[in-house]
Length: 198
Image 1: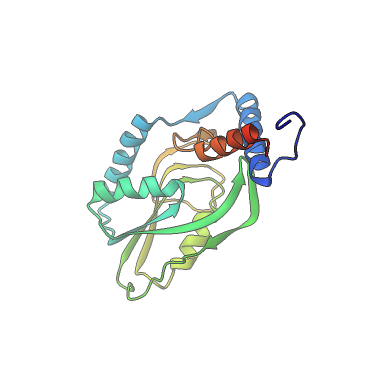
Image 2: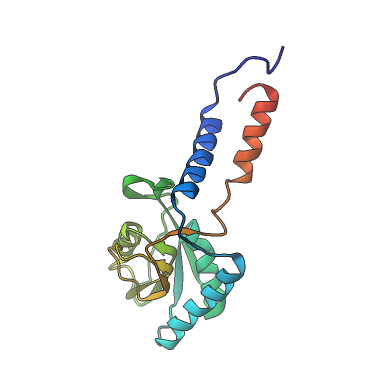
């Protein structure tokens, strides 16, 4: 009879289950935290862009660090009227409070050629340890004329002191785009369980 006996979870389903358990455990263990809503994000991005303008910095291009930086970079692109936007995918965090030993740039790697006179603004959601930002800065050095960083949040432990910061905090941050588990994962786990595969 299908579904009557426990079956081994697929690797995908098991990772989704562990992530949900980890999110619940962190939620229980971290009472005080920074929470950013979608509405607050719009305001925060506008304030962050205003700080760039007030400083007189006029970036020629914005490089967004995927994934959280994609939203920040897009908002800054519109607010600063910069259409030349790039992305770079860096893997460091593998889960909540779980990370690789060092961040890794994932393909496709942007080819920063003929940009030696360009002013770049690197956008990300948070400068936590700062290791991801430092890796991206080092990658861009010598390929563009100037690099500055803009983040929504910066933590005191960050190795990189960002030029533009909306807010400084050392609390755990709940971003609206990552506060809930992925729907695709939840759907896959539910489908696997219903079919007897999970």
